[in-house]
Length: 119
Image 1 (tube, rainbow, N blue to C red):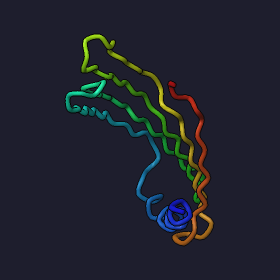
Image 2: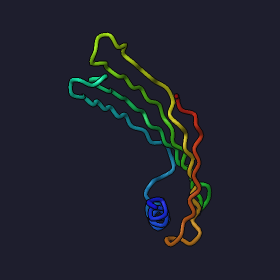
Image 3: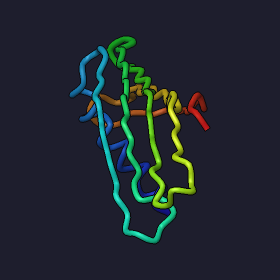
């Protein structure tokens, strides 16, 4: 039910958001750490992420956005008998095509995900 509510809202605001981002590349570095109370299997989770986004205008009314990135995560065990676990690699790649049907009124959004991430 939430998707039905959010989809029309996304279409309404897509044109306003569309005009705010120029053609080009964007990236960031995110570092997160979560510590847990004693008694759980793992006492901490640490994750570093490098998201990458490319945006290209394909004419006056069409825009292509491709997102992906790389991540690294480590699970720190609370018990010395449990080995430390680590995963690293690419995340899934998402492509979004925005086509303005009626300027500042209606934008069609087509989205797809390519499972390029690490399992």
